[in-house]
Amino acid sequence: MTDKIKNTKKSWFSMLRIITVICVLIFASFGIVGFYYLNDYWIHRFDAIIAKQSTIYRLDPKLVWSLIYQETYFRPSSIGAVGEVGLMQVTPTTAREWAKETGIHDFEEQLNKDHVEFMRDPERNIQIGCWYLEKLATRYRDVSEPEARILAAYNAGASRVNEWNKGDTDALLSENEFIKRIDINSTRIYVTEILKRFRATKNP
Image (cartoon, rainbow, N blue to C red; front, side, top):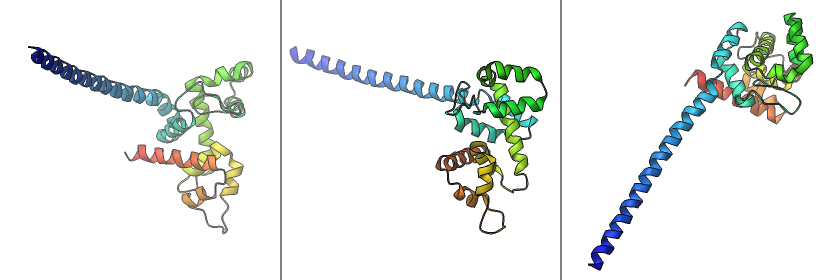
């Protein structure tokens, strides 16, 4: 009788372990699926704004999306080390240039009153960032693959790109040659990572 009870207990504990493992696996699966959908929502929740502003400023929305992914991972409240604000890490100087060019005094007043609050707005931030990207795209429109130069200028400034763009001859540098000449490690990584993501989204 005692052996039967022991065997019954063993069977029960074995069954309990199996049920526990199954429950853990089920909950883990739900967690993984939930994380996937939550992450997918997070990185695509501004797609409509990106598409709208990219169309206005004649940019590839996938490039803008890839840049935002790298800059802030879609966190509108992000503040950079030197005062860059929002999704596209727009500087106050760039925002004021944009406001001045629009000719809308209300924008300038809002920037002077509270530039951080004004620039944190996702649509406004993407609008200003795309406006600036278009200016850079125009600067490098004669280059066959301008994206690396546009991104480097966005990150480190157009004057530095002019330095990196100078080869030993007058021949135009290829994209890879240009990237190799970027002597700021963080900018080189920045450009490389965005280009990798941009091309992966274009050719999934």
